[in-house]
Length: 404
Image (cartoon, rainbow, N blue to C red; front, side, top):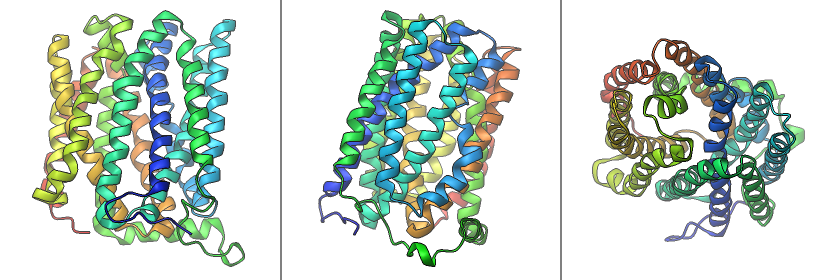
């Protein structure tokens, strides 16, 4: 039985899921700083850096749909528990390879890809579980809390600390993230067995997996506003990936930031995202979810463009502050919109299909960003920012008209 939150409370199950997210996101932050710095120590080629930076996203292209369909069938708690254990092993493996001197760029790419596979399962299971734990009027509060956990633990604490730990002792961030994933696994284990489950058909009555995927695909294609929203999101995500593909080189080589300062330069993005996460429910209530959603995407795109034009660190961090605020708004309001538009019994499959398209396009954008970064390391953010602004601004009327 799913555990619904009481009025005024988001419920015990949600709070445990959120606590697990806190430790997971802290670990993600350690990896988010340490992996790009580790890659930059192995190569300075913009194309290879772009490929490495998108290895986390490639599993969304190849595996999101079948894994989403499977997660509509299996116990989500068990899937999340197994994923956390796999993350512990991946982090420990990277640390061991660093200590032994056996880590190559290609091995790092493979292990980053494995991290990406775990993210597909964990993210899909989490987002599929939210509507079973929260009522419609609690969705923005719940998504806001998850966004705050993401911002505080990953970007405020994990990324800056990961950069410092990497400089002090290269393997230490990966040892730390393995420990954090152990704690997150314990918290997931503490959930009731069926706490995260929606309504499921008995296994003997279920059609083939391919049939269930087709049902979800037909639903998405037939739901025109949902389909268009997915396409718009995918197009902008492609240009964001283009802009951020060589971000570590932009910061280290263009802005001349030392490695120990890498995480701190990323901190203003987190500050903006934290403020945006707190403000999102209030702005949604005051102006309406669709209106707030319509403004957030072009505003964050414009901030990306301004960041790419930055001649110094001060300019860059101010633009990052604005970008973080509006991208947090978009993420929270978009997920709340999806939770209301998509039936929970097919949410995993729809989530997998849309992420395959949206996040699957990002490695393409990243590769393009790496190629044009060979010309000038500032070009990916400028070109990606301009393209994102054009697409996002052209869709303001549509997004503001969405009703759930």
